Length: 273
Image (cartoon, rainbow, N blue to C red; front, side, top):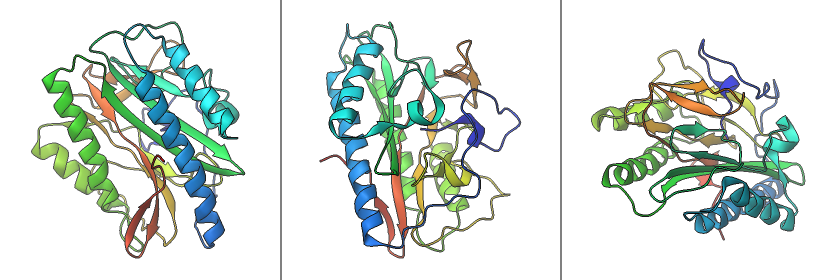
């Protein structure tokens, strides 16, 4: 889950509050990794269950209820609800909505582009994941955008490792996007996570950023979540104070994993059972 306030731009706003300043999750014990893997699996399984249930005629509120029940059954707590009083257990964004969509009466239709973002905590540990997908029948152009969006995330994850520059994530994703004629939403960033939903390092750019000089510490827990688009540049806030839209208007996809930096690269925590 990406909060606009995490991004280093002049276009910050919205009802998502600030992150926990000064807090950074760096794994030093095997037990910490075990607990992060557990909540990572839970949010990944929740996302998979919601994705499989998405079909024409279902409302986003009904989808969110599936997610809420799944999290509760696993003993997990919705992070957007607990941390920010978000009006839903998960964020579900459809078509023109690109992030933080409020679950409600909107009916999913054939051909819709849907993004589901699931973040939760258990025993004081947090994980965050998300994915975009089409409801059948799939359109070729959006299908390609979805495939490339997932690939952009994977390329970013490949740049995560102890001692490596944080800027390498955005540099690699930016090269991939530029080579294929895509744009990246530049005020929705990745972030640290672990003992809170949003921690340091804050505002990790998933686009090229020359001013980014920070490095990745061994054991750092963070998300990698680029927003790939066919023309969008920024996320703009809607009238409800939560939902974000592409500016200029264009299709956008988001894929997200929570990962841990090691000497050998990234460990992906948000994998389903």
